[in-house]
Length: 316
Image: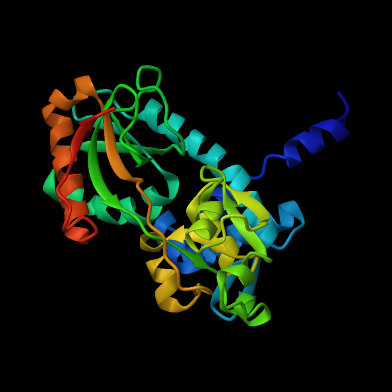
């Protein structure tokens, strides 16, 4: 095999620390917040990202003073490599974590895990210091008999085969875009919005059709844009001016509060689907799992999103 082939092969695998720093910066839209997540200094994050940009020969972030914004190329690259890096992390965690009766492994929807669940985990450790809970991202339902998970966070109906369900809360999706995009495309209603690029979520291909039907345009011809795997990537793409996205409002409170995202048409939409904790029926008898379940239900109730709705346990 030629040296040129070896060089190309080596170049196609950037350094893992640089990739991890890059993904953290894309997910947080901030070098300083990425540094806190990675337990590094901000200058170290900047060096890692500069290394990756030099490695790829591509600018990944637009730098405006202290603000950084991922470029469309960065968003697409993060969307592609993020799941692979998470699989490496998950496999390494399984190898390093001793198998004992203190450990649970939970599958979570990626954006739910990053934006809603992760900030609450210190509270779980404080309440149950004896618990060791590992998390891995999964976007779609799976067979508990084939995967080594004790439970999963599920969005949809309570119909996970072979599982019991506990309702966490419902959601309300809203159309959002960047202020710059709205300045360039001053839409005021659903009919005008249908003429523009609509960013899509891979696991909800009919989301925009349902929204336009609720807006009274069931036969609207939609201009479907790029497809993303999870909501935070969708939010970053919308904030970068790539188009309009339909995102649950609870996942983008910071962006809505800061004005990084705005709603061009004020028409939120709720459906019959909701967020559930799902577990194999045999796992429901585990005292260890019961502690985690009660903690998660308490956190969901404290959010107020489920304040008027009793928790529902059911079989699927």
